[in-house]
Image (cartoon, rainbow, N blue to C red; front, top):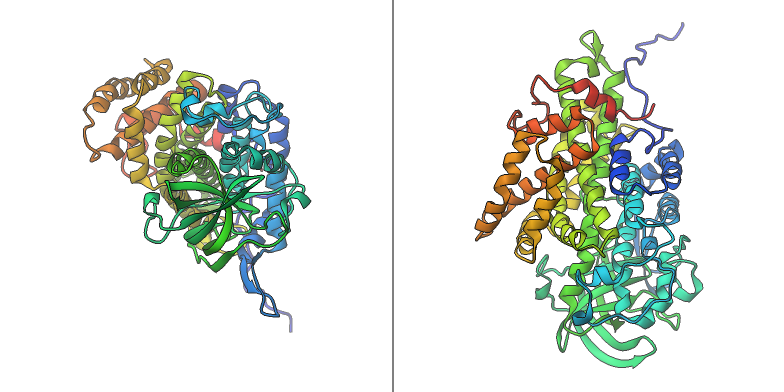
Length: 576
């Protein structure tokens, strides 16, 4: 008897694979053209092709399916405290390091100089002092930001150690001896996962250990103790005893940690393997079982008299960590923007191939409204994130220093808040296919699980809103914001009204109660002003009318009838 065919598969989309992530990301290209017109695009073009390949997508899937495993002891009972990763994790790390997404932007053409004391720093603080010529050209941070966003579209969680290496690399200048030995390795494009002494490795990565059980964002509540234990070629050595509740990427080669020293909370350099080749006294208690971020190992650790070296001055740990936080907060904005772009790309890819009620979903009026609205949100996030990265490249400019201070909490707050909403709506565009974990469409579920992380990590929404208030109360921050928005004056009446009202609102902000609303409105004003300068009229007019003019509801897909949805969708369409 012939077999009976019960059904055939049709009206199911082909996966979005083997395509160029950069070539059809017009929003990113225009943001780069505006913020760094001298940028060399060839490396980003090559990276976009590589990251969109089916082979790299397979690595991303496997690294999330086969998650890290903790090995506390070897088979003979010896304590080893190692985390075992799938080979695809290492393949992804090699690609990210090879693309220079870690410490490479900090590379300088001249020998490092001893760190200046805080009083001697130029305007803008330590970030300004740590600028300098880079092999990546005049815009190394924008170049790296664009690559970071592209990589996030492929796989975000392995970028945790990449981001931390980027953030902590310049901080090592406050210990010139360690900086001289480690900085070239942190800037190297060679990846070596082996747990061995740094001098035997072609490249290294670094992490951070700040949060404790009782403190969270309040690092001043830390109880981990640092006791002086002599000195050597790396300076003052301490024995660290205590714990860290969130210790991400514990297989990095070294970490900057906070601990209470005699003069107060201080910053320390703590290597996994000591200069003599022995393993430091870091005990990994367990790995966190997280909602998302599955390919990355996040752990709880204890320090049992672990050897560490002072970085900077005793008692100056909080300013040190705030500076590093500025850079990781940039990455939160970049990462969420990249996830937004991928979610929109997946929704567009699905709806242009899937038919319902007699025509492709993408041609259904309500679906077009949703897709256009999602595309607007994604492009606005990209514009703001890349603008923020530009300020890191121009720390010799007073206006850019102020914008870095202002836009970091604004971008971190607003982009990351919008990410989860966008991911949910993009998932709905795929229907049930978006909710399943397996196969190519499982990427959308992975994105959705990842989205809340960047809003929580490195300071949740309230911390960011308060940080904005601090920035606005210093120097000429309000005047700098007005200058930033000036080029868009007259483009949209709603934007003009918002811009005109901001100075008085800043002046009247006596308490924190409305700080979140202010952060939201500053973000929207800057995004609208940027889109006027970088995007076609169909995009910036629709954004201003909806986000600022009130022609919008409380959910995606509520744009006004006059919006040119077709032009917006076409601009956002990913490669075939």
